[in-house]
Amino acid sequence: MSDAVLAPGPLSGQRIAVLMESDYYEPEIFYYQHRFAEEGAQVDFLTRLWGAQSITFSGHEYRAPFVVERSFEGLSEAELRSYGAVIVPSGMVADRLRYTEDVDRLAPATELLRRAFEAPGVLTGVICHGMWLAASIPEQVRGRKVVCHNNLIGDIRNMGANYVDEDVVVDGDLVTGRTGAHHHLFARRIIELLAARGGAR
Image 1 (cartoon, rainbow, N blue to C red):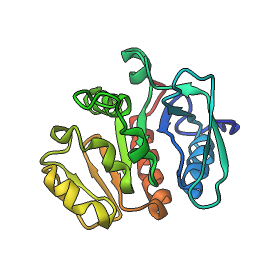
Image 2 (image 1 turned 30 degrees about the vertical axis):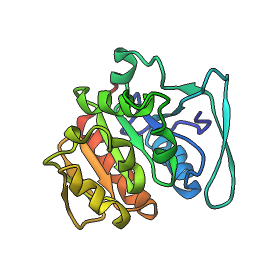
Image 3 (image 1 turned 135 degrees about the horizontal axis):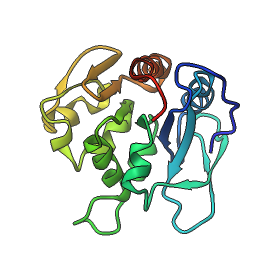
């Protein structure tokens, strides 16, 4: 949940969803929490709550706690389309979120990502190891230009994506970033793209 104070800005009236789990990269998540709000956007942190009212996650670097109270399960199509962007962050977030009890069905977070890819007007942002969450839906990135952490280059090539050696890559409504350390460049590009669209969603 974002507790940052919204400032008037080019993203006023827009909403951004960031998926969350434990082993998140604190500098990245805290940056999103405040940087997007600085431009006027509402930032919602979403996770699988497993029936709980909230879950407190621990960061990867400093074990910093982060409370999430919003679930992505049961998110309606209208709610999904109310977001200007859906972001899969770095760290181990994607690996934890791609767990599924039924191996013949997509993990709930992967299903949400699939829907985000297919929702008109919604930017999908994936940074660093976040591409793990798309491993079960390779058709969504096949033939597209992406960048990811060096450790995942083989994975994204096996998924049929075209690796581009740049810090941030934009292919239509897909924005990808190289590593968690590039979160500021990744966020800036998302801000620029959303600002160019203008107006509330």
